[in-house]
Amino acid sequence: MFLPDYHIHSLCSFDGTASLTDLARTAVEAGLSELCLTDHCDLLNTQGKPDLSFCWAPVEEQLALARPLFEGKLTIRMGVELGAAWEFPDFCRELVSHPGLDFVLGSVHSLSLADGGTDFYYVNYTSDADCYFVLDRYFSCMERLADMDCYDVLAHIIYPLRYMNRRDGQHASLEQYEDQLRAIFQTVISKDKGIEMNTCRGETVEDWRWVLTLYRDCGGELVTLGSDAHLVPDVGKGIPEAAALLKSLGFPCVARYIKRTPELIPL
Image (cartoon, rainbow, N blue to C red; front, side, top):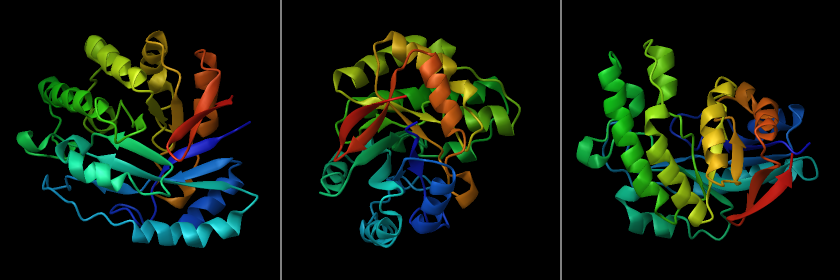
């Protein structure tokens, strides 16, 4: 079975410490077919301030070191996780013009610059009101992102729930955003873009059932799989289970990307 992990972070990310070589070694041991390095390019930093300092050179160095070591064992793609792209569209157009780039995850990790730019990780979710304040603004930002061309796949659509529901005991739900999500998915589909099923290191596979069913109902077909690994042991976690869930929900294929062009591979 084709098992890709299209969301991993190396030491080139501010919150990563592992070399791509070590991540790739674990991917081979886990039976993965393909790996895509998607280090962070967050245009708002963790303090909510603009940050346009991203440089491709460290990513290129990691790829140059790892690819020869795994030739014939593991395909390694060049990607990036681009956060807050709607804030700096000109910068993003230049960034994604890199000739070696295979894949761009479009992410919303924080409130918009106009709302203070706070990273969702640092919000104090003490009530339902706190959760839905963030979710309202989260999906507003996602609407803006979905209408852009600098991404290939919308990353981890259920992302804020990992902090709301697991750290502070809240029980927020996305179901009241169904109409907004349908509109986002219709935009994504009309632009030949896709969505990511992010396992959060194997912790959130079943949490995706409702969102994936909605996306499928809207006519969506392009889905990538990602573990969101920041540590070596987390590479590939939940990927086989995610592939099985996709198939059970009527998705016959999983997507991979080559030079930002999707290819559907049967599950």
